[in-house]
Image (cartoon, rainbow, N blue to C red; front, side, top):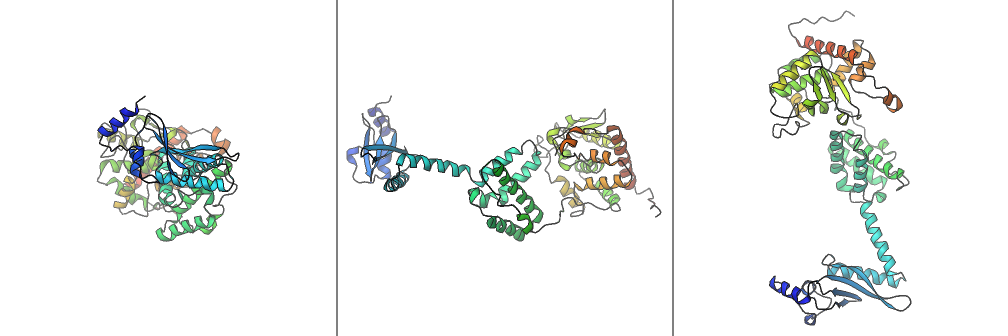
Length: 427
């Protein structure tokens, strides 16, 4: 235990002007007085005003106390908070609240506890806190790209307006006006509807966990403008050969190979962009995408055609000590940006006409039109049925899919070859 004399000498040596309690000239106590009051051999209390006292202990610790008369007529002390965490201004505000409680006949100890409970409850009952709790429930069902995209949408469009509000106090009309305002000002109709759906699910989460009785976003979708989805745009079958030739002539080697693989394997863009060499067995001719990188959180096996294997083996010769097929140019420990394939298609003149995800639509249409088994096509697209059927039907039809993937790679190679004359089928 430090002595009061030691603490005083330490304060003086640190260049702080120590003040004795006998030097106090006015009350309420000034900030300078509060900071510089020196400890004594025994604890003492100095009146600040209206029942509020400033306590100084021999070890130099300081705190605020309030003296009040209980219902039985006896005097008692109530701790308000420590200094300097609670300033003089803050302590006087709390003392004023206690005086008001007493004047209403309330027990100041009970009201202090209730006020503290309300502060904690209000801090944890903001929309942002609720939303982030809901996001945590999606950690095992969303892939990282989905989590990043959805969290970013909430942080950009919702949290600046409603994040610090108590979620129980935000009215339906406020939600409608805010979301309609974003649609009108920014013209992002489909994105706003996705944000609305997330906010509705966040309130549903609060409802099923017993925190609210109704969802203020229920039915709101009827009054928001519906946009046309453009993120899956793709060229027609007639335009596809020209697109393939443009890809084959794209100047950046690794991006060209990435687009060729996207067109040939018709996987989701993020699955290829974040692919790691350890997932590939080039000897067996398969790509094993782990469950944590799949949208449905189930492992997916992709049979590789001879053309795909040739591209991968060539790509492998250009690698520079990265685990990724397509590492970032600035940081080899990370994959390329999620816009790399989008920007390449834009540079080729296909903005608004073809997206990386659109290759999946093209493949599905072509393969269905050529009479391939729908089950094999759906398995190749990693489309999983919901419910019990999806859990128990794990057949991947690998042999059939391998034949289908090889046919498709041959077909793309053929239609991209300008030296081959393409005849239209007689109607």
